Length: 159
Image (tube, rainbow, N blue to C red):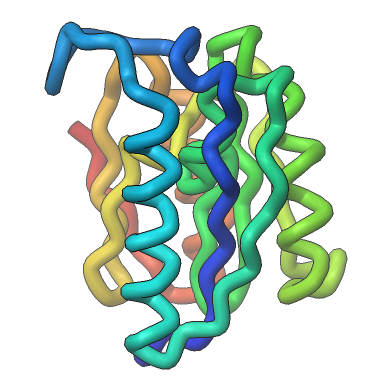
């Protein structure tokens, strides 16, 4: 499958106040550098022939430039996830507007509490999803996700 479209969101100045685990760095992000990296990312996608929808920055959601977290997309459907982080809850509605440009209402699903999931814990390889259990993704999130994708022929492995 060749990807034809991508959804990205410009980093907000507030990103320096976003969630961090210290996994990759303990340094505060540099906003200007993030803008440069984001522009290079968009440019690389466009050079590959991908049509990029660039969403405006959302100052009220510091982590909103990570659009892979509030939604997992595939050819057949899109799934709006449910972050356990209160600071990310509003991102669900914001990404929904973008998803509606590419999917009909019948193709957009949403995880509901007590399910928690962030798309960064999800890896797709063909018709197989690998989903990691984490502080951000729980077993109920994986169960609901699996129930949604199974009718489309996908399988889910959790760990």
